[in-house]
Every structure is written in structure tokens, then in C-alpha cells.
Image (cartoon, rainbow, N blue to C red; front, top):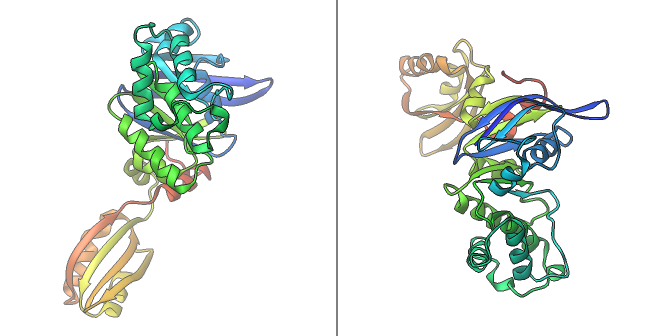
Length: 311
């Protein structure tokens, strides 16, 4: 769906993004992460045919953003960080207006508006003036205007920005409901939302892609210690001492203990797992469970944006 090669964009003499390269397959849901000023919005605006690239090549659904921007606009729905809404219009009249702008034929407009309102739970606000809507409803309407022409690609820039916890859950459900019907690219600071909705991640720092892949792939590329959880039956203090003595172990902590069963967390290279098992068995401590614990996205993101990225 998206092929980006050597994408660079300068503002004057300042490079906002430099030599970006990535591919997004049809049907994927991709999380686009980066600190403020990292280049996320600039990249999305190039993909959305709002900005021209300085150099490089971008193709969406086989069309070049420089040579065929009008064809691309027919195939994408774009929610910018500030939704393009007109306060004097009602929800329904606005969506009908957008549908017509996007080339939806007159006999299909009603059906498309109905579906967009249903997908975004806007039916009850159908006749409301946009100026009277809450921020949460405005965000929903921003997604609805991106959806109304049934695009192949949805580009959502900070869809949960400014929402309260209940509205965030509603937006997450909305996005999850769109999976499978569209390719979706989401830029967000809400790492927990990205973790729960996206198939794969692109992480950008200082205008460059520093890593891409699934959470598990990114965690494994960071190297160093892994996170291992062990459940044992026996003397927990003795088990902690035994595990600390295994070569390569960086940290051991008692996570919980009840009814003679203890859960212990170990930071060590994952290849040390057989040695951890042997050490416990040789010390006559029963091992009930050993499990790799995936590193949290917040930790992965911080390491990658602080210069500890793997290529």
C-alpha cells in the first residue's frame, strides 16, 4: 500500500525528515511513534499529499505522490492533528459535503454518510451543529470525514489527542472496528493505545527512522538482558540467592509470595534460561513455571529515542 524510499523534507535549511525508508502492506495497522518534533506530522502530510517532498520517492497504492496526487487523495482518508471542521454546519451536512468533495456519486452519498456515522457512533449527533460538539465528538467526526468515501488507506494523526479516559477507550474500539477493512497508519503519543491497536511499529527520532517491527521484534533487537518470570515452590530467599549466582544474571527480585509459591523476576540474557532451570533443580527447588516477559512499549520507546536503537 505504501512504499517510501529516501524520503527527505527540508524547511529552509532545516531537514525535518531525512532519507526515510519503509513499506506498509495492504491491511496492516501501523503505529508511527516519535517525540515532539521528530518528524511524524511532516511525514504524514507528505503521505497525505499536503506537502511535497524535497527528495525521495513515495508511492501509495501504486501512485506517486508528486506525479498523481489527485489519484492518491481518492484512495486515502486523512485525519490531521486538528480536524478540518466547519462549526456552522451540522454533522450530517458536513459529512455529505465531504463525501461530494471526495468524489462520491450523488446517489451514494446518503449511504456513505449513514455508514460513517454508524462506524463512529455519531447517529445521535446527526443534526447537531459542529460548533456545539464536545472535543470527543469532534474527534469522532474527524475520523468520520476521513472514512466517508471508504478509502483504502486511513492516516490518523493523534486520534486520541485531548480525549478523556472514557473517550480514549471509545476511540480504541472505533479503530479496532476498522481493522481488516482499511490499511491504517496511526501517529500517537498514547503508547498503550498503539500497543493495543497496531500490528507493527515505526519509530522516528530527529527525522530518521530508528527502528521498525513488532513490539517483540524491537525488544529482541535491543539486546542485553531479557525479562524472565519464574514461579517456584520452596524457600524463596534461597531461590533468589541461587538465581543471582547464575553467570549473566543482572537482577533478581521477588515479585510475590503466597502459600509457599513465589514468583521471581530475573533480568538476564534469554539464552541463560537453561542455566536458571538447572540451578534451581540442583538446589532442590521446584520450578513450576518459566516465562519470558515482553518488555513494555514505553521502555522500548525510551531506549530507541535515547540513541540505543538497533538498525
